[in-house]
Amino acid sequence: MDFSKDFIWGAASAAYQVEGAYNEDGKGLNIWDVFSHQKGNTTHNETGDVACDHYHRFKNDIKLMKKIGIKAYRFSISWTRIIPDGDGKVNQKGIDFYNALIDELIANGIEPMITLFHWDYPYELHCKGGWLNDESSEWFKHYTKVCVKHFSDRVKYWMTINEPQVFVGLGYNRGSFAPKLSCSTPELMRITHNVLLSHGKAVRTIRKHAKLKPVIGWAPTGPTIIPDDETPEAIERARQQSFSLWGDGFLFSNSWWGDPIVLGKYPDEAFERFGDDLKNVIKDGDMEIISTPIDFYGSNIYRSASYANDGSYESNEYLGCPRNAMDWCITDDALYWSARFFHERYKLPILITENGMPCHDWVHLDGKVHDPNRIDYTTRYLRGLKRAANEGVDVMGYLYWSIMDNYEWTDGYDRRFGLIYVDYQTQERTIKDSGYWYSDVIKANGENI
Ligand code: FCB
Image (cartoon, rainbow, N blue to C red):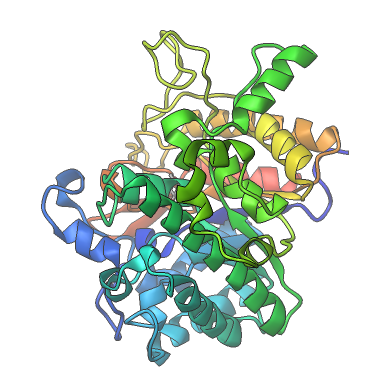
């Protein structure tokens, strides 16, 4: 059956990575504004102050999206653009920006898909304790309500939270991302629980107030283990490893976040390990809120991981393995096993909310951006996704990360993931070969893969 007729072929971005205009039209500061302005935190001290200037250039960007032919655009809302201090007055100019963006997408036949939170947490709320403050899920609910009030007459697709694994794991535990904290275990339990509660309250708020019937999910990441071979034993081992808590890396695991959201309980292993530290943060009724039903399971997948190494290589790397410009290994079957394992465990339709790769792109002498590696990578991964669809996994769609080159967090602008090349000196855009190739894939509904 291959990809369904209504398969959603799209591309994604996130506010802080593309918008720029960090202090224009009343926008408040977020933790990434503050973090990137502190010297030494990011490569070459680069910030998202201007980024792709998408805030001013979105109309032209949407023209290019239309030229490529994407059917959906996943973008995130900058919380402090619409509520500058995070929980107070609404900034009409911020609302106007997203209204204009949504209208322009629709006028060009592109489905808008909103991510509510993609890491740019309001700085003022952070100063009040941020996710450690038990009010935080109420702040998030208020913010969600404002978005739903203004955008749900035209937007159907909602994603609550992007990759808690990464923003909590790197921002609050390892301290390499904003806001650069190394929290204690009890604090990490509280942060986790407040993030999950925020998700649950957002789902309820959207469901209750949305004008168009909403389709709601979230966008986690997490390691999927690829089995060594396809014997039932190897598959079962990989499945168990994919949903284990990953030792000290529990914040990066799938089940730590996914089980409460879909199955309504933290994994047993979590209680065995954290006991009262975890029990103490769970109040009566919380798990029902957290597990309010969603419509799809999003998945940001770039590579798979593996336990099967001798300590010399990370993840499932091996001597001479193919790598992208992020140094991540190319693992062909990552989308197949992720889609299959998530579907089997959580029994929800799967939306690939992010997948893509960074190359060392530049504009060639002929004025074009030739990126055969990206085309090859995406072909391999999409073949895996197609196999999953053919075996009966309900795959809703695929959103390439990212629509255009952008600010890759602490790595600054060196990592180019886009289908569209951005010259940051001039803000000139060039559709890469992969963008034209993606166009053909979309037209053929993936039959040419
Ligand atoms: C994901 C993030 C996204 C982007 C890609 C490369 O972890 O969600 O913002 O940085 O990785």
